[in-house]
Amino acid sequence: MQANDPGTNVNDLAFRVRHARVLRADELRDGELVPVEIDGTPVVLVRHGGEFFAVQNNCSHRDFPLSEAGFDPRDGVLVCAWHGGCFNVRTGEAVVPPAIDPVETFPVRITDGWVEIGLTGSLARDRGAA
Image 1 (cartoon, helix red, strand yellow):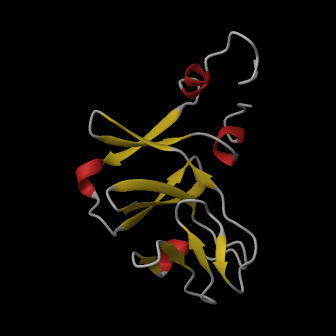
Image 2 (cartoon, rainbow, N blue to C red):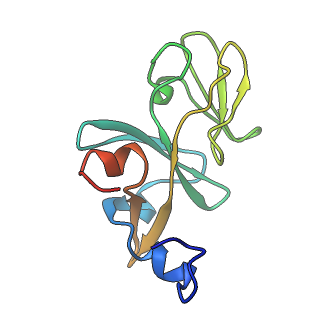
């Protein structure tokens, strides 16, 4: 079923995405990040401006953990410690060279005070989902 099929409620599709519960929302302060692993896939969870963002925890330039250098809240970017490439935490877009390719982002929701990361993209494939 596609989102544009007649009779399909787009909101119903959001409920079909499975989520992994990673930590309590109050455990991460604004401007902080924490690396997590979901079935062997490295993800970095960032709290910024009261929102949570989940991003692939590997620089697209040289496969270095983005969680190593940290997060710059002024610009809302994850910084790669190896060569200084930066990635927009909201979109995954590479915004500072030498990185030119984006990193994957994942949906995040808060349920009963818990941060949950949506198992989409590479996280869904690891589970045999579409």
